[in-house]
Image (cartoon, rainbow, N blue to C red; front, side, top):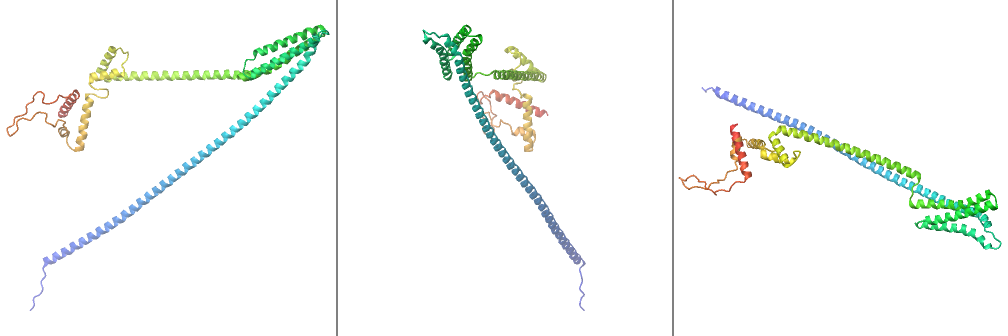
Length: 406
C-alpha cells in the first residue's frame, strides 16, 4: 500500500511568507513606481507651469521693452520735430527781422535823403531872400564891384558848410567850419538888419536878417544830426532808457550782493554752531585730550583748537590719530579673532595660538643631541624691534591677557 504524501507545515508557512513578502515587495515596487510616475507627472506639470510663467514673464518683459523702445523712438522723433520746428521758426524770425531791419534802414535812408534835400533847398531859398537887401546895401554907382560882397558872404558860408560836411564824412573835427559859417551868417544878418531899417521897413529888415540866419542854421542842424549819428551819441529817450537800465542793474547787483552776504553770514553762523557743538562733544567725550589740546593751543599761540592741534593732542594722549585708540585697536583685534574662529570653526584661543606671528625661533639653537641645553640669549643675537613693532607687540600682549581673563 502506497504511502500518502505528507505536507510540511513549516515549509508551507515559509512558502506563504515568501509569497506574501514577494507580493508586498511587488506592491511596494508598484506603489513606488506609481509614486515616481505621479511625482514625475506632477514635476512635469510644475515645470510646465513654471516654464509658462517664465515665458509669460519673458513675453511681458519683451513687450515692455518694445513699448519702452517705441516710446523712446517716439520721444526722439518728437524732440527732433520740435527742434526742426524751432530751427525753422528761428530762421523765419531771423528772416523777418532782417526784412524789418532792411525796411527800417530803407525808410531811414529815404528820410535822411529827403531831410538833406529839404535843408538844401531851404538854404537856397533863404539865400535868395536875403541877398537883394545885401546887394542894395553895397550898391554904389561908382563902385559896382562892391555888389559882389553879398555873394561872397552867402557863398562863403555855403563853402564853409560844405567843408564841415566833408569833415563829418571823413571823421575829422568840424566845429571850426561851423563856427566860421555862423560868423558869416551873423555878418550877413547884421547887414540886412542895418540896411533894411535905414532903407526899407522893419519887416523887411527882420525878414531878411532871419533868412540870413535860418538857411545856415537849418543846414547846420542837418550836419549836427550827422555828427551825432557818426559819433554814436544817444538820443534823450535812449539816454533815459540807459539810465533806467543802469539803475535797475545796480539795484539787481545790490540785491544779489545782499543775498550773497546773507548766505555767507548764515553759513558762517552755521559753521560756528557746528564747531561749537563739536568742541562740546570733544570736551565731553575726551576730557584728557581736550585739556591737553587747550594747553597746546595756548602754547602755540592759537585762539581755537584747530584740527592739527587736535590730532597732535590725540597722538600725545592716546598714542593714535583721531579715530583710533588702544580700546579701538583691542576691540578690532578681538573682532578679527572672532571672525577667524567662526570661519575655522575653532575657539578664539586656538586662533590666537595658531595665528601667532612669532613662529620662528629667534634664539640661537643650543647643543644638539639628546641632552641639548636650552638656548642662551646673548646681546646681538636678534635685531632690535622698531618702535611700531614694539608698540604692536605690547597691544597684542594686552589683548591676549584680556581674552584669557574673559
